[in-house]
Image (cartoon, rainbow, N blue to C red; front, side):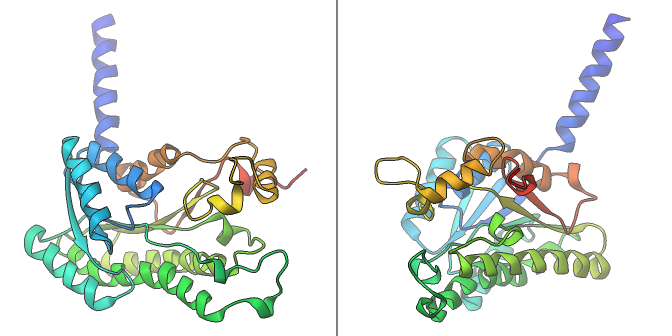
Length: 286
């Protein structure tokens, strides 16, 4: 009886492991050289995926690819500005010639600019519309262009999985970050629109979802959330006070949901925006 139970447990564990596996999946990642992206790329490679990294800074791309390979993972780098359709089309052609198809696209490219923020001592007339346009391009166009250019490589295998990056700023509009919040709200809409479009026109094996990280300390937001001595700014204190788990996120906090969305364990999940925020979006403040 004991041996039978052990065998059933072993079979169950093996089945679960297979359900969440990303082994040998061909995963394209844009914007992978930041704090969060590097963690994601290394994790997927460690799990056995073939990671194809697209970025515009050769030194950073090469360093990440080399780091993954040294650890025994599979990685390749491709140089392109994700807002430039011609450049991304060229990379898509290169990937297609070598790999024929891809399984997953993770759109991590994005960011903010100081000129696209309305600070506490500023008013709307101080805002640079040009900077807002650039932030919209980087986040929205930088997501749409890779999807448009790389989706044909998913059609080659009759299955495709796209994961976009949203933000708490899209779900709950915040002070200051007007350009970034608007861009990420557009990502939410695009994610849902594409989920319907692809499922209806190409079938149930095509999925589109987004991850909405809470507050993670990165180079882009460090000055907003912390002072030079490492203590929290007023904004940082407000965020922690509104986060039930009472801390900022760590890069590894994103990996479980990423793995789930990349795997067959989430095969009936599409059109969702999944918060990873320590409870920030659930808390009313009282």
